[in-house]
Length: 464
Image 1: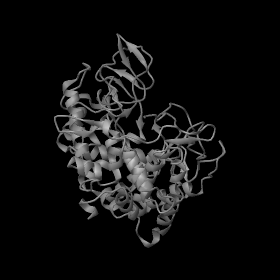
Image 2 (image 1 turned 90 degrees about the vertical axis):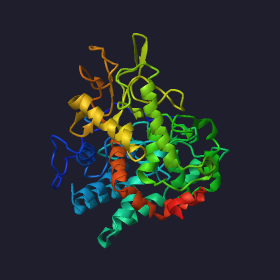
Image 3 (image 1 turned 135 degrees about the vertical axis):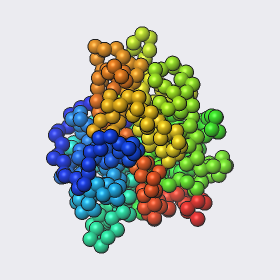
């Protein structure tokens, strides 16, 4: 089910960072959560290519662009405006550059010289040219995450002089041919992607995952939208994903990003589809239970990994030290991690701070304590210019062993050397949703979001 294909490959130099109005670099944060958010914002503002808006997959490793990370960048800019970290004019200029690129980027079925096809975009693009990077796939979910940022920008930039942003956002979204990706599956589900060399990826989006936002946007699209049968086909694959926990029964997906990505944009407090009406709670409560289950797993620590405990926890898709076995223990490089026993569960002792911090809305008490505990225990070994580095593994202490990225430290064991856009993005968005509800508030007003939820059978809550 999980294949993010994150590769440590070069894709050209980044553009020169634009100055930020009034952004101080906090040295001794009194409000750690606010400092984490501000640093995550700086990551997006300083590392995007200002000429085309493309965001690198990771930094400081020289990297190709991730279209999903670019969607999170578009989400970060209005948050920066609201906090006074940049001006509205600066944000408007960057958003316009991004949307103009995606609207004008070449589309077509040929394997090279294009950025996308059928309105969708390739998972990774060259940072400078914006063209398909190597043999990466035309990605339905990564295009969806890009659209999340585009639709938020459309709603936020509502002034008369910002009409071009709204127009470009509508055209980019309307161009997506969701039906084309549905044609290969008898259950009307959407394929994960397509390669010009080999055709559709056979595996469709199924089971409870981050694919929830994909189906909401596909059903709500202004043109070439999917019908209710697509959503019903998706939800029909849920039964094997139910698990029991101390917090109650919940739809499980082990890596925490599966619970976070949809709700970075869509407010699921209240509205329920048929599955949640039968369960007696909503997807937001489901994510709370999943978050508590992650922490409970860390307390139980069945694998006996170093560092795990009530305030040190967090498993999601992230970097890891290396694909190697040491003293009989299997470690991994980049992988989707989560409690063993849940769908897509994998545990090698690697902790990703984004898993806990971006779960603030779901379980603020335990997520806040985790953020402070991570900062207090490991300090500058894992907390640098743009906040927490992507991941670390206290159990990986073999000095001299080749690692995929990063270094082995005395304080925290293996520590990643990079920040990843798709892990930084949920941090800034979900801190804001927890504190002000900004992204949720604007996205609730988007007619396509309401239309997609209603077509999927959601009722109640703010939809009423």
